[in-house]
View 1 (cartoon, rainbow, N blue to C red):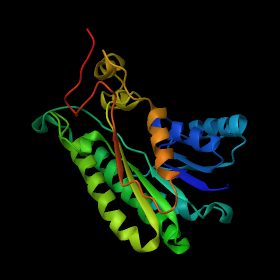
View 2 (cartoon, helix red, strand yellow; view 1 turned 180 degrees about the horizontal axis):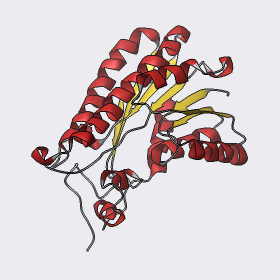
View 3 (cartoon, helix red, strand yellow; view 1 turned 30 degrees about the horizontal axis):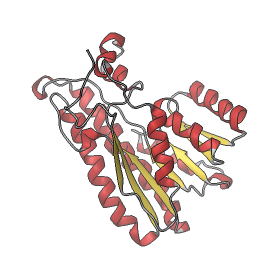
Length: 253
């Protein structure tokens, strides 16, 4: 197959699960993240388990110059990217708007919105040149429905939803498909990051139910990107069976 997929936030959670699944299905992988040691470990796993070729890019998507330089540094054999998965994102803090921390707000805005924009700008240029490609933005149910204390995180994911819709229009003349994947309750490092390392508090959102796994989302991404060329999956929102909306959840006990 020798198709190339670039995944941001590839060192954990959805990104790592997506890398493993696409490697299993014959893709070459450009894995991106801020932690070089984890990138190297993942590259070894991809080769060991699936014989998959990978190229590592260690940079922070919040830094536009770093993004531009990383994409420009790709060797010729890695430049023709078929699939971009804008996965890197985070929630930091959970508080009423008047109590929010400015640094948390800026980190979410710079990662979830600006980082996605930077990656899309740089990678889409090659796709436009090739008149071919698929951009997948990992959003959230929080980009469909606001919830208490979610304010800025929800705002960033609403922005991802709007950007995905408008990017789909912009990419239409260039034969580039654009998809939004919007998970509900998902157990990864998400809550541990949101609660700044408080492991006990990070468990609370998932108590009494079976949440989505990173592989559930990876399989959804693979489904969307493996449709025939004439089919574009505009968006998929997936939740655990025990969740109906961002706030309506049934818990055992």
